[in-house]
Image (cartoon, rainbow, N blue to C red; front, side, top):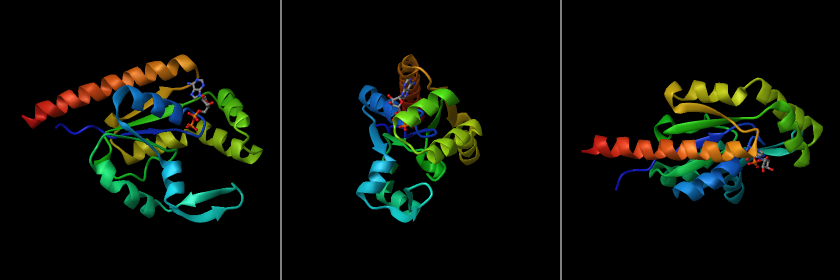
Length: 176
Ligand SMILES: Nc1ncnc2c1ncn2[C@@H]1O[C@H](COP(=O)(O)OP(=O)(O)O)[C@@H](O)[C@H]1O
């Protein structure tokens, strides 16, 4: 059977990663890997950041935990960090982008502290994650999609689904 692609859905917290991943997993049958949840379930942490009130992830332990599964293909990786996954694992990187004022409201609604909101809004303005994605992976596989409005979730998912179908066709052909 043909291999299925691995896709990273990344972006600043609140841009809509898990919303997109859930819908995409439903429409494609690819498996949604919520990295925050996996890190928590497998205790892949190394230290606690007092200022941000969150744990920092032990990336080596995290990669060891998911390697065997991800290498088989067919996974949607959902995390705000994208540049730690080996290039050979990754077929497409989607960076979600959200308008600052919309993102502010989403993070406020989530109950984030002012510090944490400010840090995330600054990262979105500076396009930190897009830069990281473009530095870590080939330009052709990194795409940037808007995630301001609900309708965009659906159109983005359609676009990624079409990309997956094309990828699978191309890969079947190259197997002949
Ligand atoms: N494109 C969008 N339009 C409107 N609301 C959105 C959109 N994407 C996400 N949301 C909402 O924003 C909040 C954060 O989305 P979520 O998927 O949890 O983000 P992330 O996983 O990137 O932190 C949720 O309440 C979600 O319903």
